[in-house]
Image 1 (cartoon, rainbow, N blue to C red):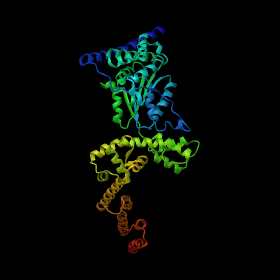
Image 2 (cartoon, rainbow, N blue to C red; image 1 turned 180 degrees about the vertical axis):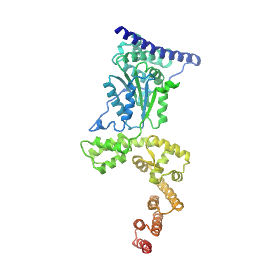
Image 3 (spheres, rainbow, N blue to C red; image 1 turned 90 degrees about the horizontal axis):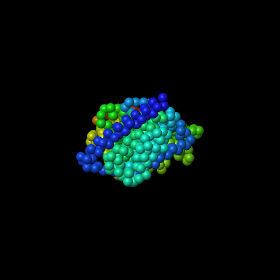
Length: 500
């Protein structure tokens, strides 16, 4: 029986080697035809993953709203003829590292071994850094010593000798030998159970490593394993660029083995539950909880940072420095059109429909569509009842950054648009009259604000909306200041009240 298992293991390793050696031969043939191809831009050293720090309630709150994502990752531990190659991506702070930590914990509980590599910005300093770090981690896992001694020797030379790494970078034959050795080690490790290969912050990995590891990942079905590529990305297109390097697909079968997951912001209810769990055992007053949920923007990291600040300083209004830097960096990376659309949504509020966006932002529909797609991908904006809405975290930030002249100009355009709407669709919307006045005030034109309120009050009073007209007249009087104007305005309203 033992001999049968050994023969089976040997056959599996030979099958892995045949796959990757065939790829190496193809590369070598291409090199002879076209000349040697250099590696892509290099990045550099990898760090081992650091355990995620947790505070009160953090463990309980880490998977709120993400259990479906975790379930899809755990499916990767089950046998599958097409293999399991999984990409998981989203903007910074969205919670991918927490998901990975829990996935690793459950995978180990099921008997899987985990090779987890964490990329950093400095990876461009060392060629093939990801391959080297992963090889070092794999050779330390249980079962690696069962690999062919020649494979172990190849990897030892690769890790110990800078010239060997350079040869793997530039020579197809050396590269194929390293790939075959890695595949042999993975096959040996998998004899003891499933193996998880995870690359975190993969957006920093250099492309030369992907060109080698892609062949290893394709061979994972034979080795009963799962590969997870996790990265920060502002858009799905950015994530797809990395996936294409790590998981190249040349036919329908290979595409079936790739599953890409995009992490969206949490819902308000999920953020509410997360904040309560984070604050335990302290109870969060409802008013404070509403503020935390409104300002979190659906981002778990932001919600937890806000709760921590409230617990420490009893302050739920000021953003912690970590959150301020995250928001500022994300706004800086927006395209000009997306930034302009976000500014316009912040000014228009509930009136931000497509026609209003065109009028106020001065963008054409194609630009608005592209910008909206960019903003929706990361959860900054979303459609709500035919209007474009934005989360308070982003609207407050973009308003604070806007210059006075920009804000005044946008509010002027908004007031003119709403006056146009009222003239063409009816002047009986109490809220819009108040919105027009508010926009004129923000535009630095209190006289037009007064006129819009007093004119709206007379129209509403004449139509029987006396209470709304009275409230509007009071507001106009507050803007005007002098008592005589207020008296005359109320007098005009009294005529309508008597007549009614």
